[in-house]
Length: 318
Length: 318
Image: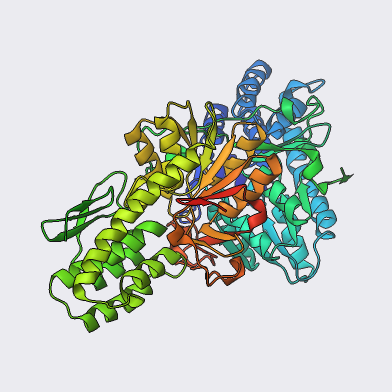
C-alpha cells in the first residue's frame, strides 16, 4: 500500500499509526494499530473519532490486514466486526460496504487499491466541500462551530472546519467561536488545537453560552459537520447540535452542514430512523457529580431539515 | 446573636461557619469565617454562592463583626467593601443596604437584630415561593432546572429547587432533569447532591442536551432562579439560562423564574442595565483546552421578559 498521511492517520513503512485523540491537546501520542480488532477498540474508545475518519481508518485497517496476507473470509469477518464499532456515523458502514462487503469481485488486492482510492477520495471531497462552503462565509463573519470537524476527522482538511479554514485562506477576516462540546470536549480540546496550528482567531465558549452570544449579534453563520444525513435532509450530529440549530433559527443566523456524500444514508427516510448511540454515564459525571448520579448521555442528536439553511456536499447542495 | 442554621451557613457559639460549596459533593468542609474580608473572599471564590445566600451571608458577617465589638464606622466600611464582592446578584447589595448602608438610626445593635430578621425573612420567603410555585407543577411533570437554587443558596429551602421540592412533598410524581451548568457545574455537583438527600428522582444532563430532551417531549416545565430582575421583567441568571428559555419557547414548554423580592432591582429599567460578571478563562479551559486558548466566560446571561411564563415571588407573581 502506498504512503498515506493525514493529521490523525499515517500509513507508512508497512505500519498503520493513529493519533490518540483522547490525549490531545496536551500530548501527541501515535498508536501502532496492530489489527482490525485493535482498530475497533480505538474507534470505540474515541482514540480515532469523527464520522469521515472512522470510515477511512476502518478501510485502512482492512487493507493493512490484506497486505499482511489475510484471506478473503478473514477480511470479510473483520469487516463485519468493524462495521459494528459505533452505531451512528454511517460513514463507517458506507466505507466498509464499498471496499469489502458490497464489493463485486472482492480480492485482497482490491481491498488495498480500494482503500487507497477511498483515502484519496476523502481528501478530494474535503477540498470540494471547503471551496463550495467558503462561498457562504463573508469577510468579517463570526462563525460558530460545534464539536471537531477539521483535519483530525478526515483524510483531508476537514468538513465544517475545512470550510472555515478555506474562507480564512481566501483572506476573509473571520473569527471562530468554538463550542467546547460536552461531555468529551472535542471543541475545547481538538478544534482549538487545530485553529491554533492554523493561526485562525478563535474564542472558546461553553455550549450554554451560544445563545447569549447570538443574542448580542456576535454570530453571523453556524457551520457543523454530520454523522448521518437522512433522505429527507434531517441529520444526526454531535449532541448539542440541535440546540444550536434552534438558537440559530430563533436569532435568524444561517445554519449550514458540511459533509461528504459518505455521510448520506439513503436507507434512512428521516431522522427518526437514525440510531443514536448512548455512552457511559461517567463521561458526563466526569468525577464531579455524586458517583452514582443517574445520567442521560446520548452522543448525538437529530436536527430536522427545517432548521437547516443548507447542506454542503462535495458535489452540490441539499 | 441567636443561633441560625441553613444548609450552607451556621451561626452558633459565636462562630459563623460556611459550607465550602466548591468542595461539594465529595467533601463537606465547613470554614470558620473570621471577618468580613474573609467573607468577601469566600463569596468571590464561590465557596459561598447563590444570589439570596450571598446577601444573607454578608449581613451575618457584618452582624458577627458588630457582636465582636466593631464600631459603626468600621461596620460601614466593611459593608461597602462586601457590597463589591460580586457584581451581578443584586441580593447582595439589597441586603447590605437594608441592614447597614440605607438603615435609618443605624447602631451596632440594629445590625445584629436586622441580620437575624433578614435571615428569618429569607426562610419565610422561600416557603411562600415554594407554595405558590408548586401550584404550577402538575402530577407527572418532568421539570428541567439550571444551576443550583436549593437549600444551599438561601437561608430556607431554596427558590426554584424549593418549588420542585414542595411539589414532590405534596405527593406529585415528578422527575427533575438537572442541567450540569458549565463551567462550574453547580447542577452536576450541588443540585444532584441536594436531590439525592431529598430522595427526589432526577437525571443529570449536559447543558447541550436540553434541546434534544425537549424535542422528545420529555420536559413539561422549566424552573430557574435569578440573580437580578429588572423593572420590565427581564432577568439575569446563571449563564445558559437564556438558551434554555429560547429552547423552551421553541418547544412550547412553560418557563418560570422563582426568586425572593430581594432579587428585584428597581434601579434597573431593563436587562440591558444589569452588569454581567466575566470570570477567569481557566474556569472554561479546566485544564482540558490548550493552556492559552482565548475564552469568553460570562458568569450570567440576561433573558428577556417575553420568554418568561411567570416570575414567582413570595408575595405574588410578575
